[in-house]
Length: 280
Image (cartoon, rainbow, N blue to C red; front, top):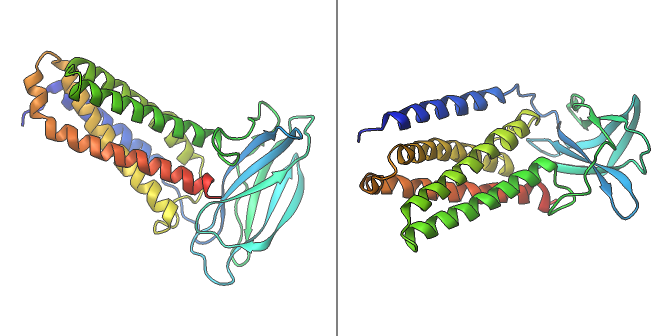
């Protein structure tokens, strides 16, 4: 099969960017020491208290090996919080820390302690009270990045449904191609603006690749990369010669495979959200 030069260039560029993004967030692995993935402040509307959602990863759990306490540093003042009963973790643990009503904008950082392997590194400092959100869109434990990612998944699914309708029902292949291009654009934005920054700011997320969440996220990332590459190629070749419907028909199997991978990727993204937040 001869590849259109425009599609070939887009394919190569997309592959390079995805590989660069993938290697950029692969970091060192620190055994069984816990890791603070995220510290997300939000405001509880019932009493106007500022709550910290602290997401902790701790892999390779076995008897006598658990997260037993955390430390919260607020402008240099450290508060130790005992986690009783002790918390074994193979999925992310979300600990809520109540800061009461915050009148200023303090800097906060957190670390978690393992009963055997010691404390994690301190998380990145977070400014609290400066535009903190009010809970999550679908779950109060959810982070802003997770909410944005889920909304992108929903928008992409609706775009795909609309694109399929144009091809199957309306028989309008030009509109079908345009809508699929919009879906691909949303997918690209979700990778570059939501998923890659989320992985760059997460620690320890992929230490235990055989655990449920890590495996789901890894497969989600792999499928997302394949979909992005195939989507750029298909949309690029269509855009270069939109009047040639016969050429599109020859790529029908590739389109069907891409759509199937895309739907599985979207489902895994939603499932990862459930594992991270709705199940906590």
